[in-house]
Length: 308
Image (cartoon, rainbow, N blue to C red):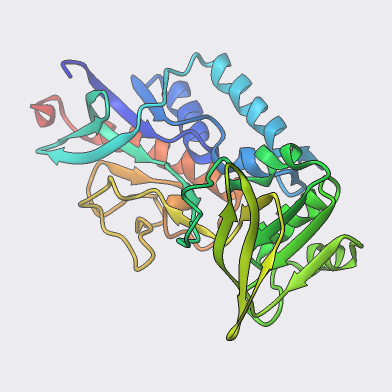
C-alpha cells in the first residue's frame, strides 16, 4: 500500500470505462478495480439508443470499450472484489480481497447486480438451469422450455431473446399486467411460443442434477411447470455495500449531486450505483466523465501538504 494513486475507479461498466478514459487523458496516476469489463452493458442483446450506433449488441459495445481502454493503456485489475472504502484524513484507502490501495480520490462505478428470488431451489440450481442473464446464457437453452421471471423491460427483453432460441417460453409476472415499453411488450405477447402467467410468482425451483421445473403460485393455487431453464429478471440492486460511510438513499443507491460528488469529499460516484433517476448506458457514461473530471479538479485544488 506504499503507492499513492491520484484516483482509484471501482468498476468497469460504461461509467467506470468512461471515467478511466478521461483520467488517462488528464494524465492522472490511477487504477481500475473490477470484476469484469462492460458490466450490465454486456448483458444487453440489442442497443438502439447509444449515440453514434444505430444498432449494436451489448457484447459488441463492450468490445469497443475494451479497444478504447487499450488505446490508453488503462491499468485494470480484474477479479479483485472491493470490500471497503475508508477515508483517512485526506486520503482514501480501498480494501480488497487481495490487499489495500491508497488514493487521493475514488470514483465508485460499481453498478448493480441482479436481485434473487430467494425461494427454495434457487441457490442449489444456480448455473444448473437458474441464470440471471439471457444474453450470456440464452444459447445454452436452445430447443428447451424456459421460464422468464418478471414483467418489466429486462424480463421482456429476455423473453424476446428466448423466443428465437427456446421451444417454449413462460413469463411469470407478479403483477396483474406486464409492464415495460409498449413496443417490446407487443412483440413478446404476439409470439406463438410465449405463455404469460400474470398475478403469479415462483414458489420453488425444482430439479435433480439440473432444473426440471418450477412451482408457480397464483392466489391459493400452485402448479408445477416443467422447464429446463429459469431466467430471473426481477430487477437490480446497487453494489454499494462496501461504501459503508457514503450516504445512500432508501434503495441503497449512493446519493450524488450534479457534480457526482458523494457525501464524503474526494469520493465520487457514477452510473447505476447512484441515485441518478434514469439507468441508461449513455447516462452512466456521461456521469463517469463528470466524476473523473471532478476528481481531477478536486486534486488540483489541494496543496501538497494536504496529502500528509
